Image 1 (spheres, rainbow, N blue to C red):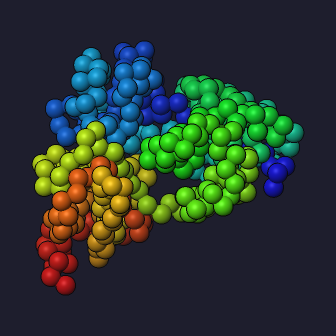
Image 2: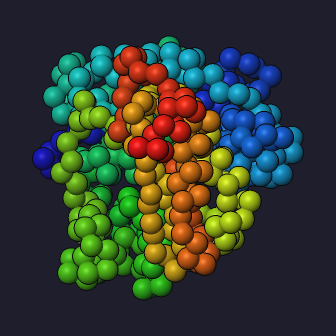
Amino acid sequence: MENRKIIHIDMDAFFASVEQRDNPLLKGKPVVVGGPPESRGVVTTCSYEARKFGIHSAMPSKIAYKRCPYAIFVYPRFDEYRKVSNQIREIFHRYTDLVEPLSLDEAYLDVTNNKKNIKYATTIAKMIKNDILKETNLTASAGVSYNKFLAKLASDYKKPNGLTVITQEDSQEFLDKLPINKFFGVGKVTGKILKNMGIQNGYDLRQLNIYELENIFKNRGYLFYQFSRGIDYRPVEPYRERKYIGSETTLSQNLSIDEEEVTNILSELCEDVAYRCKYSDKLGKTVTLKIKYEDFTQITRSISLEHPINTKKDIRINVYNLLKNLEDNKKQIRLLGVTLSNLVDKEVEAGNITIFEYMNNLKK
C-alpha cells in the first residue's frame, strides 16, 4: 500500500470559473454563484477575487454582499456544470479506471498501474491538467502522493492552478509543519481543544500517543495518530456511494431555539442542501436536523419519508417540524445543521412528497 501513486484533482473555484469562462465580462471580478443578496439565498461557491473579501460557500448571500457590495451574483447553472464535469471525468478515465469522484469538481485517481504505462504520477498529473485546460479552458490544482490524505493536502497547497508532490521522504517534514486545522477531521471545535492543549501543528500532534488521542477523541484519535505520521490505507473506490448530503454552520453568536434567526438560518441551510442535491442528481428519504449547544452537547432528530425529496420547500417543511417538536432545554444554540440521507438517484422513478403526504405521515 505504501507504493501507491495517488492523484487528487480539484478544479479551481469550479462553478465561478465556468461562469467567468462563458461570460468574459466576469473575468477578474468578484463573482458569487448562488441566490441574490435580497433573498434568503446562500453562496454555492465564489471566485478567488470574491474570496479575498472573506466570502465562502454556505454563507448567506446578504452577508456576502455586505463584505463585497460590488460582487456580481449569478444563479447556478447546474446542467452546464454537470456537462463540464463529465468532460473532466472522461479525461481521468483516459489514464485510469480507478477514479473516485467526491463531487462534480473533485476526484481521487489511483495511477499505480495506469492505462498509458507512464512511470511517474507527476507526469500524469501534468498531462491531466493540460488536457483539462486545453479542452475546457479551466484550470485545476493537483496533489500527488502515496495515499489519499496526503494527495488531498497537496492539491490544496498551491491553489489555483497548482501542482504539489509529497513523497514518502518529504511527508513527515511536511506534516510536522502543517497547521493543526489543516488535518482531516479537525474542525473549529476540535481545533480549539487541540490548541488549548498546546498543539499547533503536526509535530505537536505526533507527540501524543495513541492512548491519549483515543481517550480524548475516541475513534478519531486513531485517525489523528495515523495521519500525523502520513499513514492512510484507504483505497481509491470508483463505485463508492454517497451516503448523505448536508450543510451546517457555526453561528456568529449563540441563539435561543425560539429566535426567528434560527429558522432563517435553517432556511438557508435547506437551500444549500437542495442546491447540492440538484447538482448531484440525488433525492433523499431521511431529513435530519443537527443542533450543537453552547456546552458542546449535540443532538440529532430525523424523519423518514415514504417518497424521496430534494427541493428546498420539502426539506424546509420537515426541518421546521423537527425543530417545532424539540423540547426547549433553555440552552443556547451554537451550531445548526441539515442533512438529507437515504439517497436515491434522481432518475429512479420517485415523486417528491406533497404537503398532503407529509400531513398523512405525521398522523401515522
